[in-house]
Image (tube, rainbow, N blue to C red):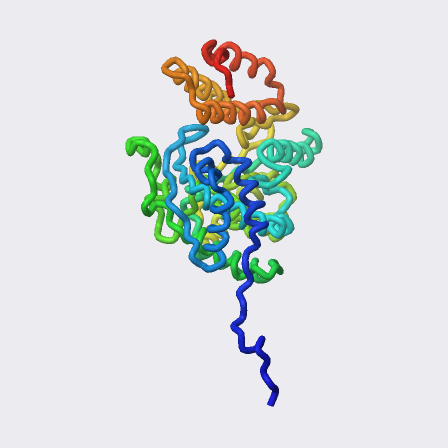
Amino acid sequence: MQQLTLFDLLPALKPTLELADLFEAYQACRHSKRNTRNALAFEVDYETNLLNLCSDINNGSYKPNKSIAFIVNKPVKREIFAADFRDRVVHHLVVSKLNPLFEKAFIYDSYACRVGKGTHFGIQRVDRFIRQCSHNYSRDCFVLKLDIKGFFMHINKAILFAALQTFIEQKYLASDKELLLELCQKIIFYDPTQHCIIKSKRSAWQGLPPDKSLFYSAPQCGLPIGNLTSQVFANFYMNGLDHFIKHDCGIRYYGRYVDDFIVVHENNDYLKSLIPVIKVRLQERLQLTLHPNKIYLQHYTKGVQFLGAVIKPHRIYIAKRSQGNFYAAIEKQNNMVKEQKPSKEQQAAFLSSMNAYLGLMKHYKTHKLRKRLLFKNLSAIIKGVRLD
């Protein structure tokens, strides 16, 4: 009989999270949310807070805190759930561990929440699809654009976690695999509508369709818009459909940004036949539904609106809604400044908003438009306010 050692008698030790990993996640989170009250409160004693968070994760007692729910109206009306800064650090931690593996699994032409990609990249790719498919605008080709109805609110948590669990078990080789799975499960199945802090007025929800609100989502369905993990997990959720369209259907010109996806093909009838195929695939595999009022199929010469731009032969220009939203953001700030000097948080939010619009517009022939919107519409009061 083999003699047991003292080591054999000790219980197996569960791999633990390294504090250094959590600190890197904190730095990444701090970079994007440094001026919020939540972040500043955490930062006052960040070392102790990180130590406590690390301990909670390792001993299994970590659970998400209350979220803040509010409504934003631009670029479209949306319900946002802002996670506590402490939870955002955990989100960055999880994403930092999974993103390298996701990048290997995702198709080249999914554009959302990926380094080196984004809206401008997606617009340029679709423009290139049309040019290549039409042989530089010398032959017929057609553009099919589809959208998913209430995408984030209908993501099935059980389907998402089952796929993620399989993926992590097969692809993730680090020793903290069990810990990572545990965090993913807690993030995915947490219901932010429970005990949340409502920041906007109740009336702000008026006019928001039920399929755009987590408060009306089916049980165990829906991811909160506003969380980094929601964006990344949504990409992962759709990855199977991406591969199905690209490889099983043999589509060369296909791209997707969140729930907006485009197919370019030389045959109009083939694109028509593809719609029910995608519809069935979405329903059977992901329990998602194509938006019946957002199916666009036209000859490329008609142009297509995608990610805030209109793509036409030989030119790309900014969509009217994007221009209107830019103007509305300026007007909102003008009205605010008339009543009081904006706080640092308000200044930072305004600058962030302006930079987002300018960042998109600078890639296209919009110099006169930007100059007119900024210099003719921006209040002289704002121009005189020092942005600290």
